[in-house]
Image 1 (cartoon, rainbow, N blue to C red):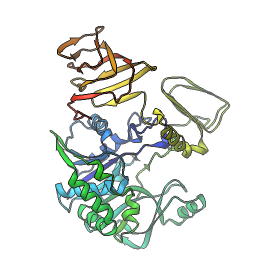
Image 2: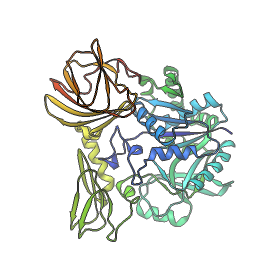
Image 3: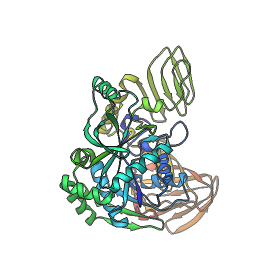
Image 4: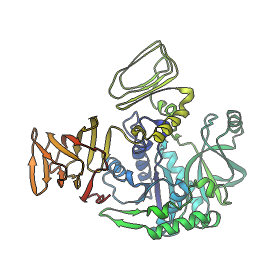
Length: 480
């Protein structure tokens, strides 16, 4: 049996702002143990006994970031493939894309395991057992969901009601899906023993999913098929990338797999499981990953508290001092600071929506921005100048490029830089500098085995990141 885990990585994690941003969503947030959710998901997939390939569906802007995380977690595993979306289009499109791609490569009988990249599962043995049980049902034509045994009456999750009169091996037929309930309804669900949290994980034959989607959501299936015809595949040295064509992808209905298929099909089963699952959907859930002190405070970073109880504090660079406060969420990043009452943890998404509507950069990215070649951090900027700290990974290179409106001065702090400046090519060592006038074609490369760190001072009439013309790029971004 061929089992292909499909990791779906997207979303904005708006409830975990200001650490989560559109360009740095929840799967990439550092957890208290130093890991992150996408690494944990990847590792969990690789630990399944029959896996020899992992397919990831993600936004094309997250592709290189995802590759870096996978390489850091399991550098020895290279049999991976990607479907790269130009923008988000909900889970029905992503799941159907995955089924079509897996069927094309592995055949209709291949078993697909859908794994959201932003969930935490703490019990690997129990998870593997649940996947084995789901795979057996999937082989027999069932669309299998994973129902998490509820531990308390949660109002932030959807629920699955099992049909207790129709057991299926280690699972049950699904009677119905229900949306997020009120607290009174959730308490009834918990007491009945018939309802389970909807984990958002699925398992099925590629051929079954395609047949059922074509039957119950033909508008999704036909739009995805047209998009696949218009899209192009790039075969790299170690993995495949399917780049979805934007115009045709925009015509795919924006609908979840639950609404499009799972709530309609009569072939849906559920495997109950107790796997230590959480979707880390709020700062409340994130705080529970850190131990509480004798006053119920949970602290990540440097903080001093007095006469304060039941607070969550996450700070990076500065000292936080709390006096006489209770039930607060305090999250500090270099460019944004959050204070919220725990009772309003779900309302943080309202702030991110306001930031996005106003065009404020704090909804999109951090001061430190990841690129395929390394990172840059904006240290200071004004109308006519910007100062950046740039780190280039060993053997990495920025594109051969040109700017119309800005000049750049580079000062090497550590490492060695290979510089192209029009028709000149030369090396810069520590404490050496060079000047790149506006209009000059230039490239920065790290030929060494340690990080190259430099300070870049930009000056000009316009300093936006879109003032760039790429002529050559080893990451396929030329003319983008």
